[in-house]
Image (cartoon, rainbow over all chains, first blue to last red; front, side):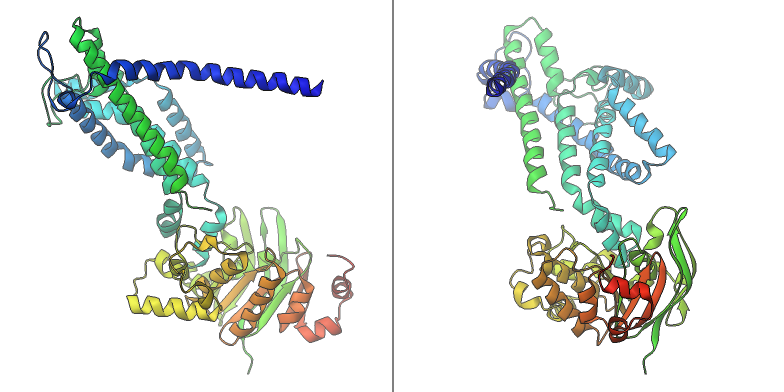
Length: 275
Length: 252
C-alpha cells in the first residue's frame, strides 16, 4: 500500500511539473519559428524603412536598448551596492527596517506607474522625451533588485571571517572593502545580471519617457527606441512586414535575457568564493 | 628574568545582565605558554577575547577593571595597533576564502592597506611559512586558494597570517578542537618552537594538551580564577579541591 501511494505521488509530481513546462516549450517554439526567419544581417544592422517598403532592421532598437541599459546601470549599480551595504549594516535598527519596507514597496510598484512618475519628474521638466528619462525610470526598477541581492549576499558572509579580519588589526571600513565585499562579489554580480535581464524587457515605463525613435540616436537627451518598445510598435501596426520584425525583435530579446540569466546562474556557482 | 607582559587587574566582563568572568587577577609571563583551562562556559574565551579587545565587538558587552600590556592600559590604546601586537587564532580554521595562500599569509598587510615591495613580500611569506612548517607542503601551491587544504594546514596558515605581523602575543582559542590528533600534535610542536619569540596564551579544555605544552596554567571555574601556577605544580599537586576534581575528570 505504501509503495502504491508513493507511486501515485510520484506520478502527480512528474505530471504537473511536465504540465508546467509545456507552455514554456510552446512559447520558445513559436518565437523561434516566427522570429528565426526575420533575422538576418540586414535586420540587425540597418534602420527601419518606411511602411510598405520591404527590408529594414532594428538597429535603432538595439542601440537604444544598449544606451538605456548602460545609463540605468550607471545610475543604479553604485547606488544599489551602497544602499545594500547600508541595509546590511543597519537592518536590525528601526531606520533600516523602515528602509527595507520602502524597498519592498518600490519593488512592488507596477512599472507603468514608475513610467508616469519619470514622465512627471523629468519629461515634463525637460519638455521633451529623452533617453535619460527612460533610463531613470528603468533604474527605479533596477535599484531594488541590486539592493536586495547585495544585502542578501553580504548576509551570507560568516561572522568568523569578519572577526579574523578585525583581529588582524583591520578597521571596520577596510574589512568591508577587503573582505566582505570581495567574498560576496559573485552574489552581487549575479544580482546585477538578473536585473539587467529584467530591465532589458521592460516596455511600459519607456512608453512615455524614452518614447521611441525611428532614427539612430546616440544623444541621451533625445528620444531613443528600444527592443521591447519596437515590439510594441510593430505589433500594433497594420503592416505584415512589421509584424515579422516584431517577432525577430522578440527572439533577440528572449535570447539576450536567457543569456544574461544563464551567465548569472553559472557565474554564481563558478565565481562563488567557497566559504 | 621573567617579566610580566600582561597584567590583568580586578577584571570582570560579560554580556548584558550576565557576568562571564569576575574579579580576575592574572599576570602572563613573557615568552611562556600559558594555558587557560576550565569546563565549558567558564569564561575562558571571554577572557582572552578581552585581551585583544575583541569582546567589545559583541552587542551589549561590558567590562570592568583593567588589563595592562607592558604597563600600558589596553583600554586606552588604539584597537588597531593593539590587535597588531596581539594576534588571535580562532577555534575553526578560517583562512580568507577569496585570497590565495600567498595572500593569506600577507592578509594583515593587504587588508590594512600596507604596501610592501615584492622582495619583502616574498621574504615574509617564505619565512613565516617556514616558521609554521608549512613551506615544504605548499611552496609549489602558493597561488591556490587556502580553503583547499586540510584542516591542520589551514590552521597553520591562520597562525602564519598572525605571525606575519610580528605580534608580541598570540591568543589561541581552542585552536585544535576541530582538528585530528596528528594535526593537533603538529600545532602543539609548532607552539613549543614559537614561544622563543612570542608569548602564547592558549584556551583549551583538553587537559592532556595543557599538560603537554603549557608552562603555566590558569584554571577558571564559573567565571572565577580558581588557581594559577606552574603547570608541573597544578598537574601534580593542585591546591584547590575544585582543580583536582576537574583534572581527575570528575566533571568537565
